[in-house]
Structure formats: structure tokens, C-alpha cells
Image 1 (cartoon, helix red, strand yellow):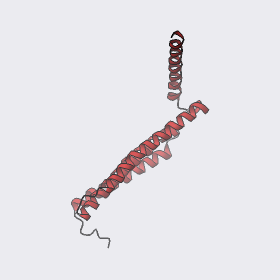
Image 2 (cartoon, helix red, strand yellow):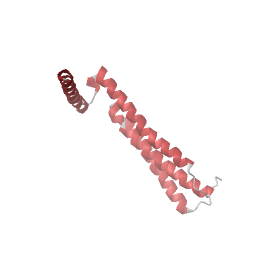
Image 3 (cartoon, one colour):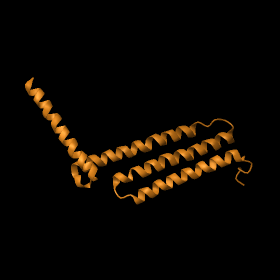
Image 4 (cartoon, one colour):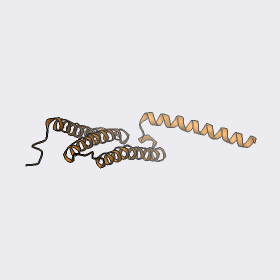
Length: 139
């Protein structure tokens, strides 16, 4: 039928468990994406779900391909590494971009914690700039 009839249990069980784990984690990430309300909250669920879910599925695929080809399959691991690195970096950049946009255009859209820390950061930055001006004027 599909060529997997002769696959031993010691390969098929871990591969099946890893695929199920990866699919479950990805589903949890997708549900978190739908369930969470703000953009900042929504960044975390898909990052973790996609990263760990993709990692489990790629590990399962790599184990199966290594067994079937009877040699170490590295290209799947490289693809997986690239995916696992780029997902969090991309979402971090999206989060920073949204934060900068909300700071300048609509500070009330920020969560309360971020608004308070924004005020503290602004005060610290203004204090630092005042100290630098004082040093420059005294020099």
C-alpha cells in the first residue's frame, strides 16, 4: 500500500508520537492565536506552538528518513534549524515594530504594564539626555 508495512515498531512508535506531539503543539498555538485578545499576547502562542511543533515534526521526519535511507539525513535537520531560528526572530521583530508604532501613534493601545514602563523609560531617557547636555555645557 504505502511502503510502511515492514516498518519496525521501534521506529514507527517514536515517529508517530513525535508527529502527534508536533501536531498538538501547533494546534495549541493556533488556538492560542485565536483565543488571545491583544496583538502582544498573540505573539507568544504561535511562536511556541510553531517552533516546538515544527521541531517535533521535523525530528520525526528525520528519524524516519534516516531509517528508510539507511544513512544520516542532515538536510531535514538544517531546514528545521532554519525554521526554528526564523520563527521567533520574525515574531520578535513584529512585536518591536508594533511597540514602536503604538508608542508614537496610540499609547493607549499598549497594555497597562507597557504604558507604565514606557513612562519610566521616557523619564530615564530624559534624565540621561539632561545629564549629557550638562556635561557638554560644562566642557
